[in-house]
Image 1: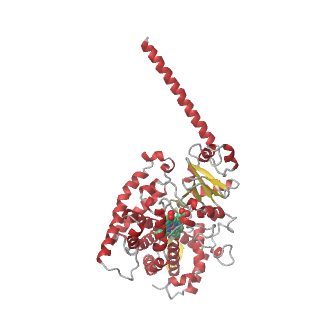
Image 2: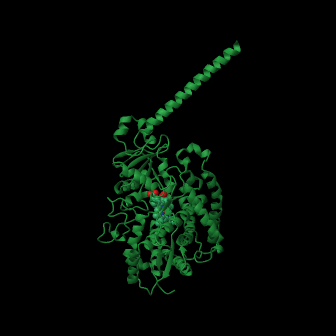
Image 3: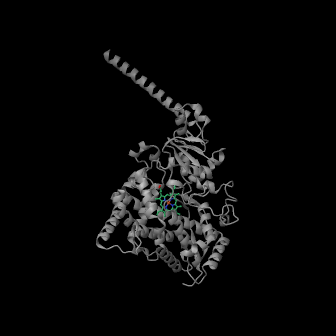
Length: 531
Ligand code: HEM
């Protein structure tokens, strides 16, 4: 009898638990649906529900609901800049500012020049959102991902005052010319054969940045096998690139980090010791060099020299220096090569544009001489061409790295609460006929006198074209990048006529950390000058 009684009681308790569990699930599902029904989806619904529904609907930022719980995470995979642009075009007002939910994370996207500029220049957006891969790769001690605060400000100060100052950029003029010369030699070596330009450009950018950052010199035209170190570095950069470019579910659902479902954490843990060995080895070499040799006056100082000299005054640990150095190799190598490949793709596709650049080079530089940097300011069409490439193919169509609101703030009259992720869709602005005349046409003339945007700066002053961002978190390497790309493009175009290897050029994109050509560009070159 007693046994039966105990069983009955246990059954009753189990049943009540089951009811409670079902009720809890129903309540959770009801709340999830309620949150989801809000413009911008569940993360926004949850925020505004906590503050009274009326206020939220009145001031809601337009945007897709997505799915319950996960919101619009699906939009971020693949060519996110295109998916976001299509969503924004579908809703009244959403081009200016669109709300969406990335799982539980609230996000906004601006696809309008004024609002983009408002976000980028607003100090409230000077922070970056959580990024596990960045953490795993030590990037939280680097400029790009360091928490907004005194440490990050010290790094930015070092970057603008020392690493990327105009004197530093000028000091590398001879080395820029040398790398360009190596590339020309490599291309001449290819004769009339087909060249896959990407490999050549990547290697040139890496060697150049290696010299700028580490003081190491390599020869671009040398056979690849002679530089095992470079091969390893290129591979490490590629892997880091993959890891930072992936949409990591753990960034939205931090509880998943312990499980690491995509294996990103594990790959970071594998890569980091290799990077550390490499970078700390270089720091040790520089220390030894500094104590044994007297400093030579003429050799430009590299980043390691500069950072070591500021180590005490700025309170930098060796690990901090290593993080900054690795970041520079990592950021500097890729974006420049990606931009030049796109620019060259357009030049082989639009032979009339190429002919105009050639005419300008012939008039200003002349066939009998090579290009020298002092001529660059006298080449307005070439400069306009690079701006047009940045407009149509911004290496970071969503500006690569996102921003996070540190405090509650207002954007375009809407409240954007602290913690919200903010993005700027440069790609969408570039394609907007309300911003550019015939936006799909590749037309450098738009940046010359008589065009719709003469004298536009690409460095952040004009919201229509912010490929390097703007404001506090903008690219510290932008003037180095622009000087280098302009000088190299001038040389490549002065020395060769460029033609596609096969009829037509496939302009499909793939979005990693940068937006690259999906099919690497293949070209044939014909020398325009005697070797
Ligand atoms: C064509 C070449 C380049 C492009 C298009 C480019 C673009 C960008 C963009 C869009 C950002 C983010 C801006 C934002 O968050 O709003 C950025 C940040 C950054 N870039 Fe560049 N970049 C280029 C070259 C370089 C080079 C050569 C270096 C260094 C050697 C560099 C170092 C950095 C760093 C350290 C940051 C992080 C800044 C911070 O968060 O405070 N970039 N870049």
